[in-house]
Amino acid sequence: MTIVTPTPVRLDLAERSYDIHVGGGLLTQAGALARPLLKLPSVFVVADETVATLHWPVLAASLEAAGIAHHLYRVPAGEGSKSFAQLEQLLSAILDTRPERSTSLLAFGGGVVGDLTGFAAAILLRGVPFIQIPTTLLSQVDSSVGGKTGINMPQGKNLVGSFHQPRLVLADIDLLTTLHHRELASGYAEVVKYGLIDDPDFFAWLEQNGSAMLNGDAQARIYAVRHSCQAKARTVAGDERESGRRALLNLGHTFGHALEAETGFSTRILHGEAVALGSLMAFDLSARLGLSPQADLERVRAHFDAVGMPTRLPAIDGGWDVDKLMAHFAHDKKVDQGRLTFILARGIGKCFVSQDVPEDKLRALLADWSAEAVQ
Ligand SMILES: NC(=O)c1ccc[n+]([C@@H]2O[C@H](COP(=O)([O-])OP(=O)(O)OC[C@H]3O[C@@H](n4cnc5c(N)ncnc54)[C@H](O)[C@@H]3O)[C@@H](O)[C@H]2O)c1
Image 1: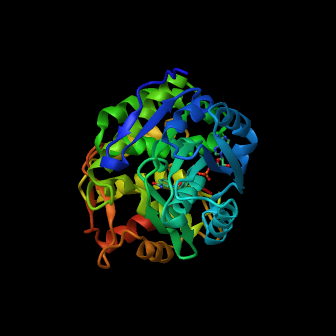
Image 2: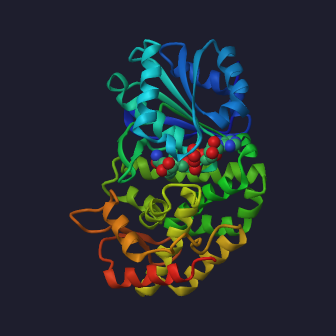
């Protein structure tokens, strides 16, 4: 069978290199694309339960057509599944099927299922291969690429995990048609991030095409997802373990994780919404520190407004508390020798890592954002 897809993006990591396919109709080709990479013609599929209900029959037919046996395991939707309890249940279910070291896992869902499955693959039998079929915009442009896997702990997000690269990533943009608009907009924060970090032309493209992309324009989706995967692949290839440039991908995340922690990792603020707000806070802080023009902050805010992304904190019971947000920063895994790490900007497309943020400026920023929360 001849497969016609746009040229895949390649993530170059020597013997751990892999292809990232981006396009429409990829789910029907998943079996044929995966088959050459499998030592055993069998996969253990870990699927988000919502995704399984909507899309499993197509994936199952594709695997069967390629002669790949499969076992389906459904994971409850939501961040709560990135837990030790869920990981244990999953590992136990896989072990019941008597896996071998060449047994492959296949993650079929958003970032939650991808992170959980990837971590299970990293530690099962000291490491088995896995494939990512990301089904949300966020997971297609970010979490499925680069090999960061893990779960959350009561103390914070992603605090237990491992680097474990997938063997293949299939980002089928057709899957995005069933995604709730709020989830789509949340994932868009990670798309904009690539423009804000070091690609002002991409940011300008998004200003022109972002709304069309969010409203379903397939060509715009393929372009934006592919461009994002290229950016991520380039960054990871140069710094797999985040000892340098990869840290820039955390733009908005130190703030964002604190917002998520303060709202109990609930749907009050989705991960991408927290990243969007965190990115704006980073540009605001940069402007206050005299590093970045105020006009660039306003331009980012105007774009978020134009595509319906949040630009102010939502009101929460009891209000936002600066001390609590500061305490969440202290738990961030990017704390280095006791110093907080932030990604700041000298303008759109000019981000850099900083460990020199004065505490008084940080507190003033948080106080202002808290006071302006949407009622
Ligand atoms: N590993 C990394 O490098 C990395 C990077 C960024 C984010 N993340 C992690 O990703 C997670 C967030 O991922 P997410 O935003 O994809 O959330 P998610 O996996 O929770 O999915 C969001 C929601 O969309 C539903 N859904 C998924 N695909 C669907 C589809 N095609 N149609 C309809 N509904 C669908 C899910 O059931 C869920 O309710 C966070 O845990 C975050 O920490 C990891």
